[in-house]
Figure (cartoon, rainbow, N blue to C red):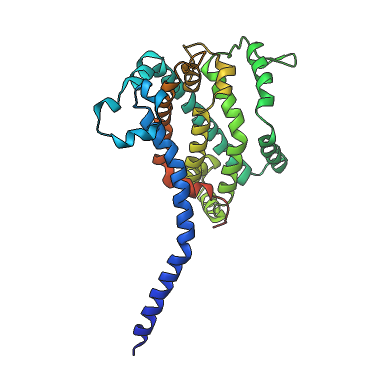
Length: 309
């Protein structure tokens, strides 16, 4: 008997053993996936059902007559999109979310590079202060920021920006989300950028590259995974935010975002609760698209900086 004839059965047995060892994990993942998917499927089916059917029967009753025309309707979506101001709220949410995602990422990338590879006095202390800001609840800062917006830019008797009146405008929300998102962004990016091989930076300095050239031509291309990961977190956070938008934008239909539109959709007495399912899926379309378009960077970005390479 040859050596290959002995080794191959052992390999097969090893593969079978590893497969059997992993089945509890696979089963647990499948159960978790079903637990998450069943409510989503129910919400999706309910969004296409007429109001009388929603109020009288559960969503699972449609499974017995899926092909019956009277089972389905697009009325909920037409009301949400064209009669409840959702189209304007959707555009307002885009106008809030995109700058509130791009601005903190841009600022944090420069700050993270400075903390990681530029030497200046008080660097470590300043970084500890920035990281410590993550502990402060954002609710504690809402009223001071609101007073700053409404006081014309006066802080402790000092005029920061003359004639400033940001309350009720999109820049007010951009600045608020930028301030709340910067500590986490700087922390994540600094850990990743600080773990890049020092030989890259030494070679670039020998070639005469400036810090700006190193940042734009080396650091940014190498940091795409962690940038994309934070972009997903920040985009989802801002898109689903209700509190900050309510405080700094107000409830005027002209500037309300999609979370405010959903809150107002039900009505004062809950008489339009059947529209919530359609509104939920309208609000989920773009976040799901963003997540799946950037998911290939997601795992690499989450583990970025955990090991040195």
